[in-house]
Length: 290
Image (cartoon, rainbow, N blue to C red; front, top):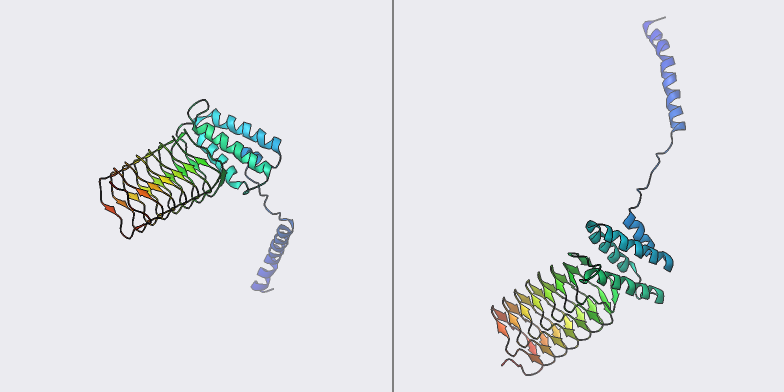
């Protein structure tokens, strides 16, 4: 037997064993077992608050309160989850869903209003949410976001302190909205928002910039005695009713470029500390600026 023949004879058994072993591994191989990550207590609470059964919802809400009260670090995540549940509710929804929305709104306000159960230093993110007769009056919070939010009924933010900014670009207020005597430490924005009723903004104090560009007020817009500590952008705003800026104080630059005052406007005793622009502004009636 030649050397090459002896090598084939010696290795044939080994090659055959490897082939058989490989086939056996292919046949006996099992797919890996996938394990879903366990849900956190807050996720479980949120799932129950989204339940179609009222008893399960209320049970989840009670656990939500207990979760937020147990640790200070739980409060902001708990509020974020509550806002997410509100955001997930259908609009306008059934009568039961509407009642549940009001319960959640009242629960939110109770945590932001100084008194028993008050949670200090929290943010609210209710972007693209439907809210009904929303009331955050006499509250104290940090930043509030309401981008594209739809407010049904009257809306109240009066006598509220925002230690951060208030931003509601593109929001839609179907009736009146009140901001009377509220304080905004880092800006106020209603850019592109629509107010179908009256906008009550008298005696507000804004330390940061104000962004009202392209907003629409169908009713009266009252800024009497309001104080603006930074720049004010009121360009291309449409005031359908009376616009009152009597005794308002503008510390920074202010622009009303392209704004349309369809109703009567009142700038009596207003003070402008920076540059002001009324370029291409339209006035429907005689200007009151004595």
